[in-house]
Length: 421
Image (cartoon, rainbow, N blue to C red):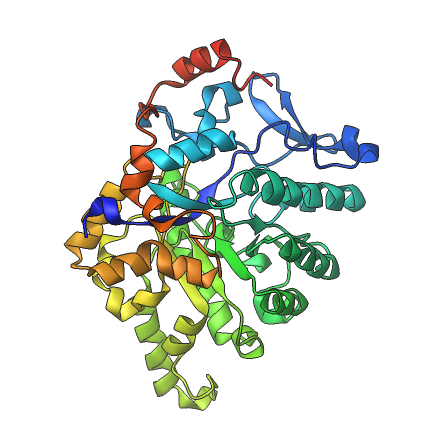
């Protein structure tokens, strides 16, 4: 096996939703109240819903085409972005150039937990737009290339019964999971320990869907120094995922729902061996607490329920046998600052080779574990020989992967009529 023989399925990428996304998915009576892009007084594009700009901005979410010295938290405009950020046809071309067969895309304008709709005042209108979002994502973004995307939905956090109903609706449309808060109690919602979300979790199990928990929503679990630099906001979230795992593993959730599957997105894998060693030692040593894992060790229950995802993690890959090779999955994180695009195969291949991974282990980590976990057939629409890194790149040699300054993107895109909404 060589690098070009790999098959790459990324279960953590992001869509920068195009401004016209609601035109085809909102009933006529609500259309004039749909979220829309407005150019603000600073010349930046922002989503506005129910009269207010949303708290989600592009910023670091859309830097893939820029040189690293231009990355930052600042917002921007669509014309400054690489078109693959928001145009699904260009996204697939960028995936081809990167040798990536399939992608699961988390939301940006809606927030990982449908924050845009959750924070708005009119919940009837919010639910209409949340459903329209799911319809756009499943039917248009993923539906345009059904063999290239794993559909991921969002649910209304403000009403568990509505969340259950939406899970059943989008499951019927082929959705394979939902994006949700990794630590809901941090943002004022009941915790996973509380039982509040149990009807939603039961629906996920019944519909054979995955609970996808992306880092970034649990920052308030720790108290940082007021002088903390921005680095803390980027490095620390990957460490906080252990607290989510602890809530689910040592709380009642997994005992109540033995069929629940949980994907931990962008949290890395290197922390897992230490955590599982500590969890097992605690369970064996602290018998006075009377924990019950059904005759198993906590580490065994963890491996029954979780899929852990990484972008690059050389230390974790060297410890893959202590983690469990069957619960490790790869991710690309396009178009964020952490992405390895357009050299994802080179990054993944080097780390896997340095770790001494076998061909069988490479296939598990780069595509088999993810597609099994999400019950998604990677070859339903594409012949296997056309799914490899080499085959995808061979048909995309015309894709220009050059990084350019934002101003140059804007000049080129506006000249081509791209991003001028």
